[in-house]
Image (cartoon, rainbow, N blue to C red; front, side):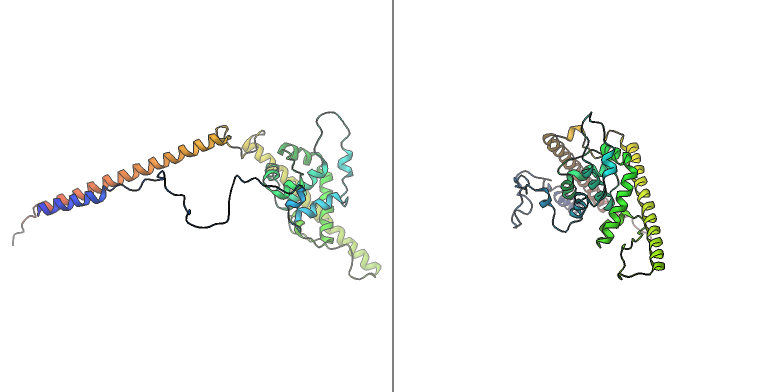
Length: 295
């Protein structure tokens, strides 16, 4: 019986000690190499449309925001009048900044840092900014400098959107207040009805104006909180200095991968050692004499 038990232990050891396949073995064919997919080349040189507006499909909200500003439908005169000094580095064009804020706020993005990030990552924002990238400090300063004028511009934008049956910008009205069109379905209207409709419209505009003020206050609070969290000179999503260059990133990725493989190998070795100890313990128990029982 002892010989049989020893043979069992030896057999278990042989089974346990078979070397597992190396993790990330060199020379292994790429995953999915035998399958067919659409061509994908991250290094491919693209010939993009020379006109930025062609980057964004027709019917996108960004085109409406751009036309809203470029057509003169929004009165930017109060903002332009605030720029009188010629000294210093030229500021960003108010049209760019208004488009950026209106489009961003319409999509629920009130953080100046996130708006700066979108000027690089969001093709619609990149189109609205004409491939310029105002930093978050410039965005926050513009909003603070023209707070009152921007509030009125947002109210104008909401009224125009409602009149044009476009509800995409309605998120600027935080509580979902609905703004009725400034024209009745009937051309003729009694004097009393006109007075009532006018009062109702003024009340709705006042509600939207209050909501817009709340939105701007929220944006200021978000920027202040992010300044506290990241520091006034950091955007918050920057890579560490040692990872900014591609060569350094690849080296760190390789190091991290090697560390994970080493950790996996150590776990596997510990598992094998535990299995061997367990099998030997069972073998010793099997060869131990069984005490006799007295009748």
